[in-house]
Structure formats: C-alpha cells, structure tokens
Length: 145
Image (cartoon, rainbow, N blue to C red):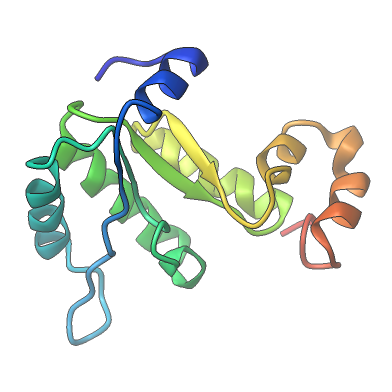
C-alpha cells in the first residue's frame, strides 16, 4: 500500500474491521517471528482494513525497543502493502519519539498512540513538553528518557 494521506488513512481504517494480532513468543520468551507472520497471513484472509502491531492486545508496554522494531518489521513485511500497519507508540515523550522513529524505519507510516492522545503530539513540540508532562499524569510521562 502506498503512503496514504491522513484523510485517506482515516477512510481506509474506517472502511472495515481492524486486526489486532497477538505478538507471539517462544518458550525462551523471545519474539517468534515465524508464528507471528503465519498468524498475520491467516488474518489477512479476512480482509481487515488495517492491522495494529504491536500493542493492540496490550503487549506494547512489555516490549523493548528492539523487540518492537522486529515486530513492526515483520508485520510490514508480511502484509506487503496489502493493508496499512499501525504501529504502537507510547511511554513518555522522548521514548515515544524513539518508538515512532523505529516504526518509520520499519516502513510503518501510521502510529497508534497509547496511553494518551497527546503523547506523539507532544513529542513534536518542545514548547508543549511541560504541559504534556502534566496532562500525561506523572514524572515518568513526558520526562526525558
């Protein structure tokens, strides 16, 4: 799928069901890419409008940046442009920026902001950082990572 404008993305996401694949792990608690990709392949048979990876099932906050990057890369590769991949993004402002940049490197063009709708917006405007820190509810949210 080519890069979509925000309006095109909203139209695409609103056009049907969304898919939230579980991130698979093996017995050593390592990301199981083969199982994850097989699951995505199966989900694509049902023609979802978009796919959230990782995080739609709650695992986002337990992943390292490296694991997150591997999950997004695997989702983008397996979907092969057939549907948009919406990558999770959250934590405090500085960490959210790192996750957003990792998603961009993996060719995910859209972010799903977790915890607060202001997380990513704050990351792009230094002047709003203090306000965001208050809005996000604590010293860890919005603090420099």
